[in-house]
Length: 259
Image (cartoon, rainbow, N blue to C red; front, side, top):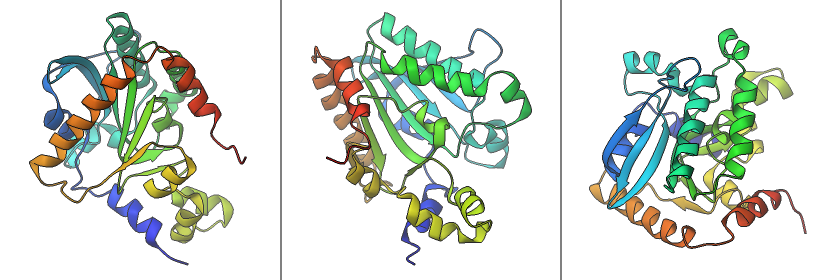
């Protein structure tokens, strides 16, 4: 069986890939980071705050993996704790109050699965995000920039528009985890990746995302400039839409339809 999908997984996990911080720096002006969930702690795996998209104030939230070993340890390899998701939700509700659009950058293999995270309500934190984002009365755009793993990614992806980079992935489970469950053999990860339909092209075909963003010029300044213009154009449309919440609801209700 072809290993093309698993090669995409490797690219999405590449250590040299741009992280959430890189996208924030490349696209926005005057980013002011905000911290804490007002309940327990600040989670460094999720960064968020207020920035300007040219002259438009927006709330930006990103899952951050880090660039080197020290940063990755600090950021928990981009695996958020419950307080990270609660911080993100706090910032989204703040954005709704002040009529700011929300832009999310998603890159995680999944939510942190430690005992402490479970004790502090990891599942509930994710579920609250899913529920609240569905009715958030302000435009929401999510961009999958690397790994989009399970509920940990979906907790920042209930949006009006979802984009994926060409070599990003979006899946209910990792290929290794899927292979371990189905075949009791993690070495069959490449076969599992094909079955999971986790590439950007698969997601577009299934209607899970609106657009695949090419990575051909990813190392050039034009890449971030092009993405900035795309976000600006999309927000101009979304901010004028009186049926924003109904369309968001219908977008997700349409998943899985076969007719």
